[in-house]
Length: 174
Image (cartoon, rainbow, N blue to C red):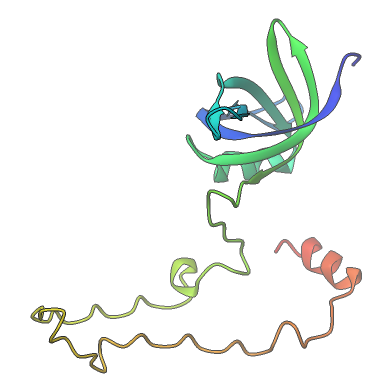
């Protein structure tokens, strides 16, 4: 299409993410991102928020399934793609969409804690103890933080994976 330009939209998902399928069965998702422009006021020495600008984002293919599963209302995202003005509304045909890590913590399959992934049982709750005044409190064995277990291998010391290994892992459906 003519009149499109590559753009990056950073903002908050507004409303529901809608997932549909085309006649050929291709998944397509649509959602709205509210981008709030910020301006620096030199006289006051502070940042001011402008009027929110709604941008309707559309994604297709496997990305649409991921977007529909991961994004909900009020999640901060960064989306890139072709931006166009249609019917007085900004539309972004997204090529990439991701959670904005400035606002959220995101886990992927490989980094999901074992308890959340269902690979380990939840730790037993600690017994309730009688609270002591702060000036008399002594750290006990139960109150001391338990250090996290060291990883099996040190990522910094391990050899980098080749692209062949990455492609093989992605083709197995991981």
